[in-house]
Length: 179
Image (cartoon, rainbow, N blue to C red):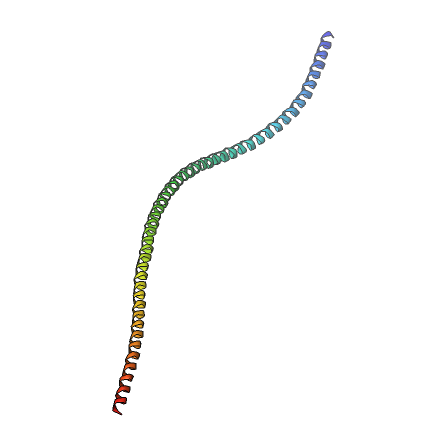
């Protein structure tokens, strides 16, 4: 019996163990199936993350290319701005030099024309004064000649009257002598 008891105890203990193992086995199976589901979900999430990571890498690459292109454009624009600034500076310098040269030319022309204009006006005034004085002298001479002619005419009229008076006397004396 002891053996039997021992066997029974062993069987009972084995069945308890087996039952415990079965229940643990079902728990483990449940846990394994839960873990498999979790692993599948993690794999799906991992795949999604890998796709997103690839997309991000592609976007980063595109953006890096765009940034590189923008940097090149900025460098080209900077160079173009420098060239334009230099050309504009050169043109401004040339324009300033041209303005100064034109100003000097205009000032010289104005100075020369002012001097010539002044000389022309002065010569015209001198010419007018000379003509005026000559005409004035002629007018004075003509006036004095007219005065002389008038004086001579008066004298001649007086002489004519005297001669007329003498002629009348002579004629009277002859008439008186004749009769």
